[in-house]
Image 1 (cartoon, one colour):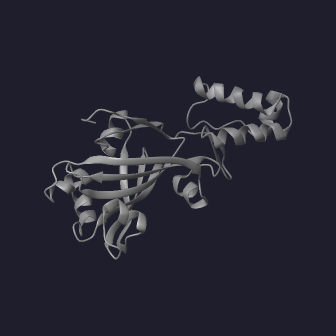
Image 2 (cartoon, one colour):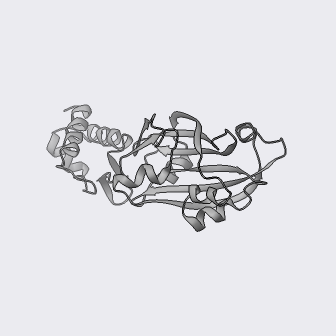
Image 3 (cartoon, one colour):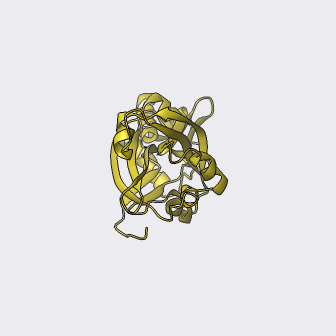
Length: 236
């Protein structure tokens, strides 16, 4: 049996629930005996499923059916992380990895309309669903206008509530760009995913209702754990 047929057979068992998330895959010798093939074909099939995010190979423990969440994230006029992900039944957490004031890069300056020497508050966060990393990245705010935005967000639990303390009752997503690429070594490690699995890079600009820039963000998403949709609903 070719490795493609082995891959498809195992993938079908995962899809039908015969192999459930967290189940340990039979050992390589057991799979060789079952499919009547060589070790090379089994290894290639398992590697392909791992790249697709269906299997997780854990050194020293074995190979397991991936238990990672599969979320849908709607990008629209009012894109909100918690509003998007919480109704899907996952425990979603956004954890601060670090924050500091830095000189704005050209990309950040252009997005926020800042001067060449402007300082911004960069906050780096990891987002998890049921404890599994799904995304990490940075957001940037004008340090003159939002010097303590990180502290306020952590105190109040959301960026939306933090903005209200600055007198900003509502805000919208003015621009979103997305592209997929190969994960870099540190990105795969951060997301705890197979190194050959691609990531989706999302860059976004949020503004006040009058168009005044509020924040620029760049977030790296695991492509196997999140599906993006575009929403045209103004109330999203």
